[in-house]
Amino acid sequence: MNRRIYNFSAGPAVLPEDVLKIASQEMLNYQNSGMSVMEMSHRSAVYQSIFDEAEADLRTLMGIPENYRVLFLQGGATLQFSMVPINLMKHGKADYIITGTWAKKAFKEAQKFLDAKAIASSEDEGFKRIPNLDGLQIREDADYVHICENNTIAGTAFQRLPETHGKPLVSDMSSSILSKPIDVSAYGMIYAGAQKNVGPAGVTIVIIRKDLIREDLDPKTPLMLRYDTHDKANSMHNTPPTYPIYVCGLVFKWLLDLGGLSAIHAINLEKAALLYDFLDQSSLFKGTVDPKDRSIMNVCFTTGNPDLDQAFVKASKASGFENLKGHRSVGGMRASIYNAMPVEAVKALVSFMQTFESETKGV
Ligand SMILES: *Cc1c(COP(=O)(O)O)cnc(C)c1O
View 1: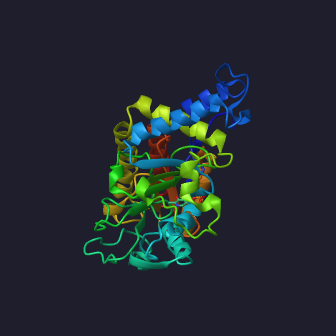
View 2: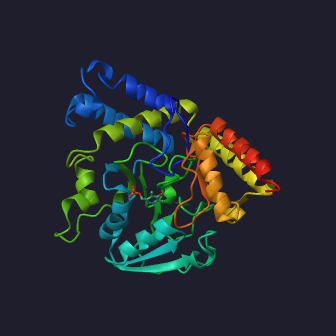
View 3: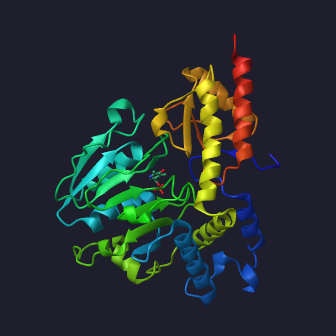
């Protein structure tokens, strides 16, 4: 293939072509430094300015208040499944809302460290919707409430946040961070692996309210697993993932140039509507989740016939649409249409689906 294809991967995922072009232009000699960003000391002035700009641009984009710390860590969102309970534990209790595979993994990991309770779950409905959030029984002494805001595998998303009665809300936003404007102050902490909607794999963004960063942890807690270590060292207790942070910084600038998160949100809504409107009238394909809880990032659908699904995935691949196969735990298809996925790609996919549908009729 001598051209770029339409890559609907759930992650690592498509990046803005303009960002890749800048990264390639700067590959050998970053802004007359005489070296690639990959080759720079993380303690150098030139790298420090890349890092500081990335943080400042992320703060501008998301409107992150002064009393929140931004950390660039490693270990993926998965390490946060452990770091959250280790660091936020006071009474030793935390409440989890189980909306999918990742939420459940976070919950299971937390159970190792504290009394984690599933206060709502849609597992018995195959995670096809977000459970009813009215009258949630949050424990009086819960240290935090954990949600996975966009369920990458099932294709659902929270449409409103749960009422946590003052308990810090911790959100895994790995597949939805920067997809729309949010009120950061509604959260105690937000975390996201970069490789879905932000940048390359290797960096995890943590946004945490400063008063939740504790120093009185069990002294045996490994230094790398403590937010206070990374807070004090400005994310440079050890070598940070320098190149991924640089690319994330380019993506932040790309978003700012587009007009920020409300601008990208409008584009994301347009892309999602193209697909869902098609699915809602299709005689062959149907969406797999409750329409009220649909994700605008991960669109899951099926023909209802596994053989036909397989044939569709094969045909789509042959036409330049990659990674449309659904997660192995769900089956069917999934189109991940993150920020960097152009509207034309979604239009091309819908048109391909229309053709496939008409060719399949009467077979
Ligand atoms: C991909 C994903 C994870 C796991 O991320 P890693 O960075 O691979 O650890 C966790 N949560 C959600 C919502 C995800 O989409």
